[in-house]
Length: 477
Image 1 (cartoon, one colour):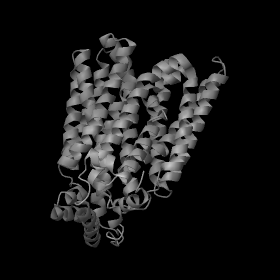
Image 2: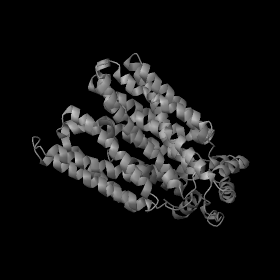
Image 3: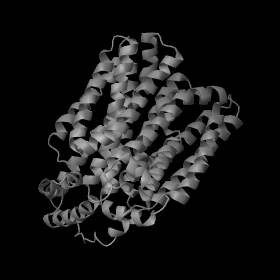
């Protein structure tokens, strides 16, 4: 059915260099404001690492009810990711981020004042809708506003803000817990911090532009050119308009952006399969288990509770440090090669953690320190490679007309995988101990095979030229 061959020679617009000018500062400001969505994403998923024990005491919860607090947010995130992509296509990226900011405020504020456990779960679900919506919309917005030369670093800033939010949650929890630990409502103070960046995101986005590529897809060319002039030189803005306009005209005769078209079109179906694989394998590294249950893992390693709480902050420090390294190298190496390196590294660390945890006796004084080092290396490799690359490549590989729908499906899989792993991880550790990490290593081997055989290279190509390439390469599935 595909008319893929028609695009190959149609979109051939030479783009002038970016150059230097005030438009670069404007682009930087856009990235800073939009990535407050990532900061909220990180804080609201990481804050429970320290708050859960206080919440259990306040509401008198059992372990299953404790798990539901995390699980409810993640299921909300899965729903928010699925519908967030469609709303983003329908309403626009900017308007959708504004709605997400309101949901962050309602969800965070509701959790702070929740009088009962059941009401808390309702607001955790609302907060999850915002987290999922942000996980879909913010990377797409950044990818579509950024020039292709800066796309990798700008989209990856969102991942930096996510891990920065998690680190902030760990650090603030440690401070608040030590200062007000005897107060029954201390967990409310921890959750209340998230209201502040929600304000910044909402009022900041009011002054930000809409995605030029979304505007062109809606036939609003004049508005799109005006946006591009804010974040490009005049010459570059006009050239990019011509490139995207040509592609948009051709696409009017093609897919309408429905799920049926995705299923029926071989090259698009193949890309969806690849996107789902990237999303699922990113989560199957078990990274978020460390972000949610890091303190418990370190206790199992042999540290005291207070020491585990303190060393858990190192998880956040390592995440932020690795992300900063990733931002400096992500445009220097091929995406596929870097992802392959990441999965080889994380799989090796899983084997190492499993071997140390099972091979050394629990009373060995070296055991907890070796496990801590191996866990930190795992986090560093993961957050410096697979973490940002997965979100970046998901934002890159899908065609413009169906990018919102396809990212929605892909990130739905990501959040569902995240939720399932987070639900079963405590039980696995309880029954299998550090053999759990050998299971992660086995999955890692499958991930290495998947990246080596199925994931395409996307570095140094415009979103439009990637679409052109995929139509030719994946004519059949």
